[in-house]
Amino acid sequence: MTHRLRLAPFALVLLVACPQAQAPAPTPTVDGAHPAPADPRVVEDSGDLYAAQSAPSAGKQPEAEPVKSPGTGRPDETNGVCRLYAPELPDPACCEHTLGFDSKVAAETCGLQVYLGESYHNSCGFYFVPQPNTPAQWFRIATIIGDTPQKAAEDNLYTMRRTDPKVSVEPVPDVPGAFWTKQNEYRWAFLPGWKVVRMVAWKTSSCSDDKIGGLLRHIIAAPEEVTAPRRDGLVPVAAPPPAPAP
Image (cartoon, rainbow, N blue to C red; front, side, top):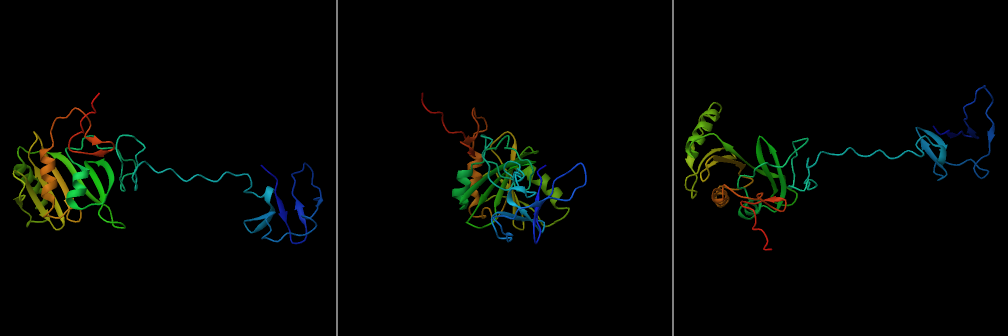
């Protein structure tokens, strides 16, 4: 522990630990004068003045800011697999399967400016910013139990009707074989095309009803079996880009 110099109003006194009690030896003033608090040769700590090199904080390393979990509340690409984004998760992970979602098509179809990233929590979530200085918007996609999209939608509706008896299942306009449920600004679409039914959830602030059809048709058309990850670099695409020619 370093010894500290306290500048009293009339003298600079050196406090030194001693085995026997002794009167403190006088210490010369700094350049023959008593420094003021603004003098760069002294620092103030807890209301007292100290010689700069002997202040309690002298020599201490600044405390490092706590490291945030990757992707929490900000895009993060340090994992090298995907662009992570998860404001509500302390330790997010990349989606194991993106299920045919294409972030580039979503942005172009729905008028979204920036793709923030993905994260998995019960379902795979994809986050975007529609315009500068606006809240993040999302899409979520997962596989769901059901022999057909209509059956899966109706089974899901049974649970929803416990709180809202007015909700219903309807065909999605211009998306053959797909059914959806609408409740206020929320939408759930159940898609054909694969052996399993995929459910896509979003809000109308993410994509309006008149635009969402283009994105859903693209997800439906995504090949079910692929031999490479469904990402172009770190962002999800419906099918992996072709391998470069040797």
